[in-house]
Length: 171
Image (cartoon, rainbow, N blue to C red; front, side):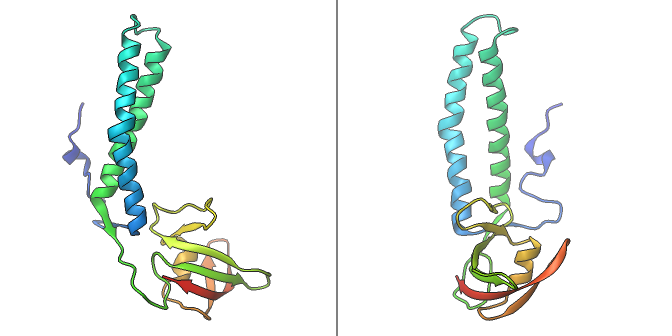
């Protein structure tokens, strides 16, 4: 049974909410989609064609590998198209308050040294970067939003609460 895109509610989420992204996050998703559609998909189609030309497909490892790659890429394309159809790009305004897109330097109570994070849309989050990006729906980000430099904030998490001091905010 083949479903149409309309039947899958592409571009709509169950709550009707938009996906929040920073401008750079939106550009990253858009560029990845272009790369998949214009470069990677055609490469895989060439691999499939070459594998088909080898003859019997029932025991053709190259063909199976190319089909698996194709399925993975098509799935990522579908997901990116869905995300981009729901996006609301957040306009980062000059403000002293922490908002989506803010880079926040803070110090955790009882620790030495400062840490920095950037608050981004939840699908942009990547804690492995040099400047970790945390999703705006995380407990940490929720605790920081709308605070400003110098504020003491109690971060409320499922595993316990702790206090931090906001050292600086860059928007």
